[in-house]
Image (tube, rainbow, N blue to C red):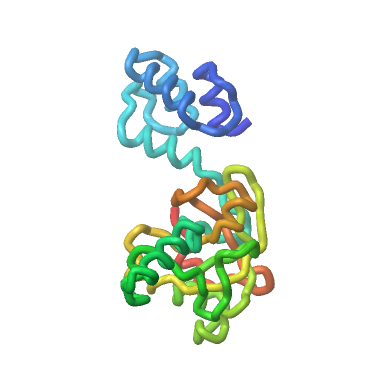
Length: 220
């Protein structure tokens, strides 16, 4: 039984290791009522057992909720791209006389940088140029084409092989913190929630990760 399951057991909820709405609600009730259970939970988390649920306790709980990344994998946040709604919005804009650049502001033509249809049944991802080059070598336009990575959903452990079919903006221009875009086939294949930005683990299928790749993507 891991730390999260032990905390859930103390709270009297199902110790399934998924600290979600019910667990949070019961924990908050214990905090509001100054329950001595809080001191026991702090003991499990390795923080000062003063019964005060502050920044250190919250941070320790968040750290305990984050499963360890398997050897060889990288952790990053993914968003969804090349959806049906993206394609519909792009086509609508073009039909209204907008330029492709204007259409890209509201949607996506779902054609990857190497000319691949990213809206089909094949699991596909997009990665930043720096990530492609640190993982597969430079230049990214040559080395990244049709490379495959294993994408894992850390919540349920499901994995899928996806093709690198498009490129994201440079890392310096990404404002939402995402290190990967996953198409609907990836999301459906491993149970990622529709339209959400969530954590994934990934690694290349046929090459070793370089130190540069780790320095770019692995976060604590």
